[in-house]
Image 1 (cartoon, one colour):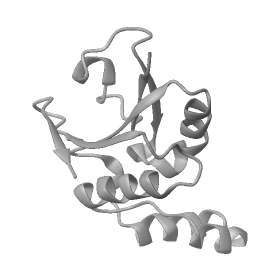
Image 2: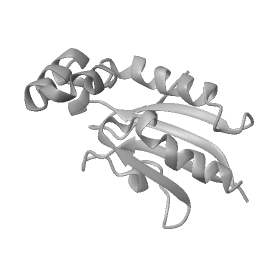
Image 3: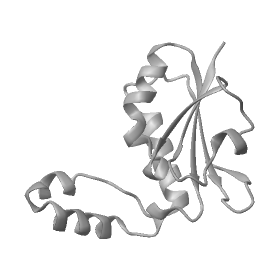
Image 4: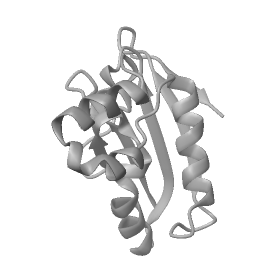
Length: 137
């Protein structure tokens, strides 16, 4: 039996069990700031290697703190905190626009050499106020 792995934001207003109507053990949920797949790739690769992941869902949401700042704004703040790590900070990507970030994550998953080519990869925008999921292709 295949399962779904969901990558979503760690924002406490985003509760995958509610908007996906899933119970305990029904899906793997990976959460991080912004719900970005680049930060979840290690976990996704491990789940896929176990052989029971059939679908990967990427769910970003409206009013996300990660979309309130630009990529350059986050990097500027990090360089002020850790100037000795400037080169490492330059390589980081934080994203900016909601729909674009979902499409970018879908492409990362589809092009990953670490994931099965037969995974069903889906992207959604969650409206934080209504709970409505809108598919992004």
